[in-house]
Structure formats: structure tokens, C-alpha cells
Amino acid sequence: MEPPNKMACGFMLVLVVAFMCGSRPVSGLLNTYLYINNTIHPNTAFTYHCNSTAGDFGEYTLSYMHEWHCKFENFGTTSFWCSMWWTDKNGHHQVKGNYDIFVGNRDEEKCHLLCKYYAKVDGIYLYNSVKNKLELMYAWPK
Image (cartoon, rainbow, N blue to C red; front, side, top):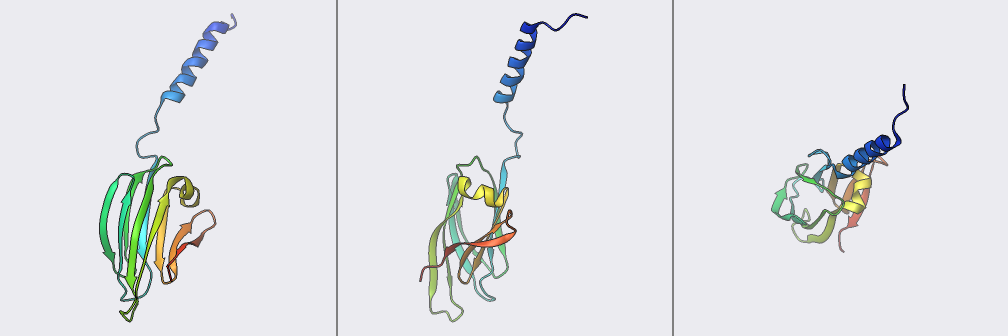
């Protein structure tokens, strides 16, 4: 049996590399799920208005222990920013902040494809799936 022709092997290698570089990921493999949860206090409504590089997601209000979620394709450049507010249980003081909730190249290593944010009395937390714990991302303004 004759050894393979060097030129034929080189051509095959070029074809394989070209195919790999030109192929796109299967649709859906880059989907990231973002959740926002209200864990502030019973009987405390939490309101937020989020935007992303893809558009305006609108304003929503969550009851205690409820969540909102969305799905998007993250290519490392996707960002979500939100205005968030709630009123203390006495109804006297509104707590409000504006935050970069999801920044692809910052958060994808912490939460991978499932990013869960929790509004708490002291701030906004992200569940870090690598460390298996909640991390304070933003404290509420004083």
C-alpha cells in the first residue's frame, strides 16, 4: 500500500480547518437565562425597569419571593442595565438604584448560562455558580 500523498493530506487539513473556522455554533448553545428575584421582605413590592443592548424590557413589579426571567444569546458583549426600587415596610423611604445588572464579559464566568440576581434589603446579589454562593454586586444607596 502506498503512503498518502503529502499534498492530499495538506489539502484535507486545510479543508478541516476552514470548516471549523467558518462554522457557527448550533443555535441555542449560547442562550443565557437571567432571573431577577424579590427576596427583600414579605409584603414588599420590588419594581425594576431594564434595558439591554437589544432593547427595552419594560417596567415590572415583583411580589415577595417572585421572579422574572428572560432568555438571550450572549456573545460576551450583551449588557443589561436596570433602575430598581422598593419602599421600606413602613412606607416612608424609597430605596432606588441604577445598576449594570448583567455585563457579558464580567458575569459569564460567575454564572455561566444561568444568572440569578436577588434583591435583598442591603443590595443586589448574584448567585456565583462557581463558588456556590451569593455575592453582593451592588449595595443600595444610603
